[in-house]
Length: 259
Ligand SMILES: NC(=O)c1ccc[n+]([C@@H]2O[C@H](COP(=O)([O-])OP(=O)(O)OC[C@H]3O[C@@H](n4cnc5c(N)ncnc54)[C@H](O)[C@@H]3O)[C@@H](O)[C@H]2O)c1
Image (cartoon, rainbow, N blue to C red):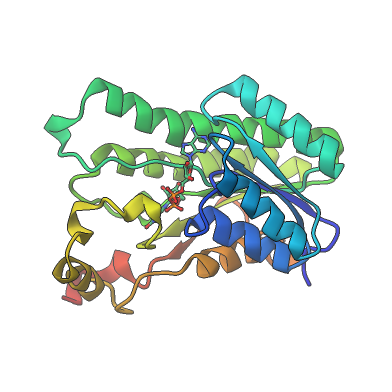
């Protein structure tokens, strides 16, 4: 096991079908103690923490809205109090809206920017603050998207927030390298999580099949595959990796010739 003695926090991990849970579970399988977060207290979030405990790990369910800096601060304090320290932080919470550019309302625009950018910045700031104070280095891993590399219609603002993460990761990696804090992101393609349940393109079997056809590997990605990439970045295997990303998309970003 690669992460024995490490503690981790994963945001946006309440649903058992979500990427956040795939990440939390894979970290725990490698021996890490793991705190899981989501926006509201829920039976689902508690159930995730109980599943981690059943794996023999120390665990914690901590609800907080990542868009609120004071709640994020309190969450980190709670995690450190319960688990002793914090070595791995995965900023995974995110939302999407499928809207053509001219249909986006100011409210929707604010919501997507708030969660995806402000939320990520809040979590990264708190993570860096705690890790620098601890003096033991650390890993900050953001869940961006294949949209940090390629553009799609109907999700223009979401795509812009995910592209922004690429720049954030590079700048943070430079600032935090002297503290031995590696900053990276994973860029998933298509994962059939709750986020995609209302995707207009995936409402019919034909739509799902069409989606598969644009992916060279001809399938969606699985949450455990996302989790294993995070394990790589969080463990000593990823010691020399910072300021970059791993694209986990079955080749979607290079698929222009595969239709
Ligand atoms: N599913 C995909 O195909 C896909 C592809 C690329 C990137 N991603 C990214 O992966 C991440 C995880 O998404 P997912 O697909 O598992 O979807 P998901 O909807 O299952 O998970 C996202 C979780 O974030 C939580 N959340 C939303 N706002 C929050 C807030 N303000 N504070 C705390 N938690 C909040 C939600 O309640 C939800 O449980 C997101 O950042 C998403 O953009 C997903």
